[in-house]
Length: 396
Image 1 (cartoon, rainbow, N blue to C red):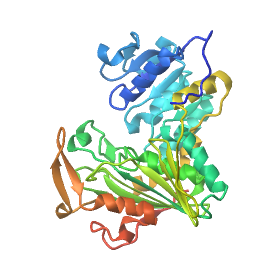
Image 2 (cartoon, rainbow, N blue to C red):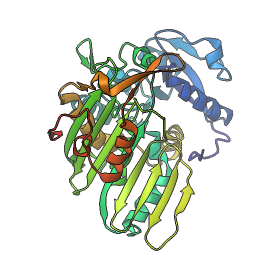
Image 3 (spheres, helix red, strand yellow):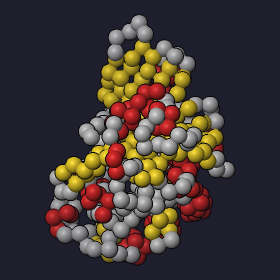
Image 4 (tube, rainbow, N blue to C red):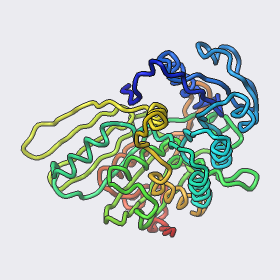
């Protein structure tokens, strides 16, 4: 993985606190091990409702542990806080960390609603602390390459952008925590849907490639939200985004695929196309009169970028304002009618590694078709969609 931080010779490691050490927190622990070995950080504390065991903290020393983030930051003198906690706790914990003098790496989605996002941005602005939103795909150097190709006219005029995600999740995935698969919990918004959490990168990356990352860059969002599992939120969904630039963006995703596949974003032009498999940083350029051109790019780790921002003022790759367009999509999903159930005749239960999973009939090819044809499930005639136009929300 490409790094953006300078050598730290003669500089003390930055003290870091991690809030949320389980689940995706394991990825952050691995990254902290890597950066600790380079002398860049020291894990000073772990904030969790239950202390982590020694095995989870291998090669990370003996950090302080506690369940109060603000108190832990003060006790450890941490200067950076990583917030990897349930979605509905993001705003409060990020603002708590900033109020205690720590810069923040906040996991995606940054907030469960547009109102909470705006409160987050306003509070961070008043604190004077930096915040990076954890869309790791936006640290990929492939994005700059794709945008340069589009701006240079490599595929002609832009026709639209599609994105597809065919993933597999077993039933236990939706019971791993109290907030999993929920739209609300105890009266608080959660919005743990397929496009707002597990495949949120597909939405954010598509918007970024269009140059439409700010809140004001989105004109409208149409939603088609469905669920095959017995959950509140959606597991098979599609959104149609129209940006103020006039771009049509269609993102389709499911957690009920027959076969898991690498998610991708495809830029359609009048004379060709560019496909980005964003987890792999892999780009394929296809255009008339040329052979296919495939390249793999480096990426900058977002915690390293935050450290470089602290050390020498490097620009943040994913400041909160650059996720405003994504939050317009979250808000459209939040305010849409509850997801419709996929009829039982259109899905089947398949044994998995730990529990059963549900496979929606033909969903793999329909997700891909949405990205390829820039069409919604309804426009493609998906059998689980009632014949009606996608609901459209415009949020000011």
